[in-house]
Length: 418
Image (cartoon, rainbow, N blue to C red; front, side, top):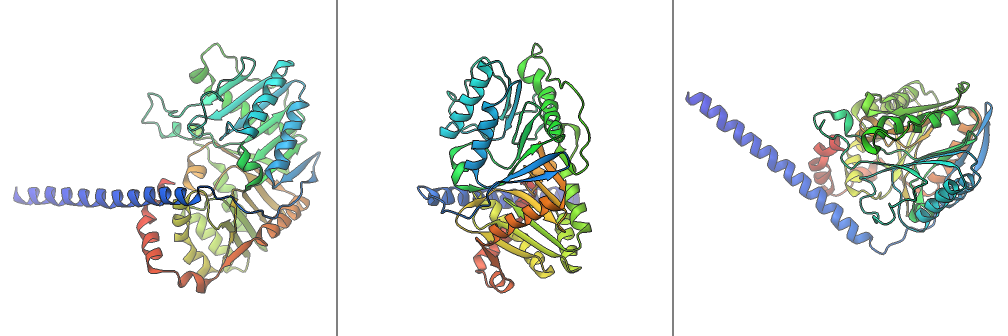
């Protein structure tokens, strides 16, 4: 009996120790975020180099890259203003500022002239947006993805994913997808990547929005709302494929396409990511590629908008640098792109970050493109970004302060949460 009591006391002590350690980790993370937010107040990012929009023919359509938000938003608004039948608009963040109001007005004007307009935005990501802005004209069909999407099925982990996608489809003619949210800061202050798509692949974007709408319309909008139906089937475009993470269906292909492409790389892997919190298998794929002589480069923000994510990602730097992976940090502005290009042939642009939330939690969409012309454009974009970056050397990394090493180690267990 005394042994049992001793075991119970030991377990109680262990639980208290673990809760204390986790509480300290969480307190440090919250404190770092608050201090970083205070330091950023009133500070504006500096100008950064961009690549002008370039259209590349791929199959029976084109892909146009955008690396500056103002260029992208003008192209999106032009497409909305020219819509004749249908607009499908889906975004994670939709700010109620000047740019957000322009999009809202353009969508409302399209609906007023008889265009069928569907809008989707994530409720949690827009909690700080004014409720006034989120009152839409009756002509718009709007789905607000709920802050708490699980409902009574709190035990079902497949119902907790956020809608992190950014998509616009106009008629059957043009689609846009990538990392840009909607807001004034994203127009000029953030470095991101989006693509404009024409041709058969537009139908894959239409299906992505329609499937999400139909999956959520009854629970959120009531049974009277009709499903979003597509008129005809599309032809297949083998060089452009849309991959969707759908947590409700336990579908997470984006992680797989990255690892498969990295594992077969023979020349180069150039990757740009806003937040880099991969699992060990992903890291091992990058290390193995570097060790077999592949030019593996990872470009990250020098300081992102989430300081805790920055500190957590540093926990991977030692093993990556040891394996020969080159790490570059983008200066003076937030790089929010989620892209990679490999061997002058394979590329991807999308919404998914390399972290647990994006790769195994949220609704995401990435375009996979197998085309040498497009890969050439992506390599040019990467070189432009690299020209505004600082390379992290092994010597610099080893010489960092002891308190930095301690903080990285202490925060490490929080990685699975992000």
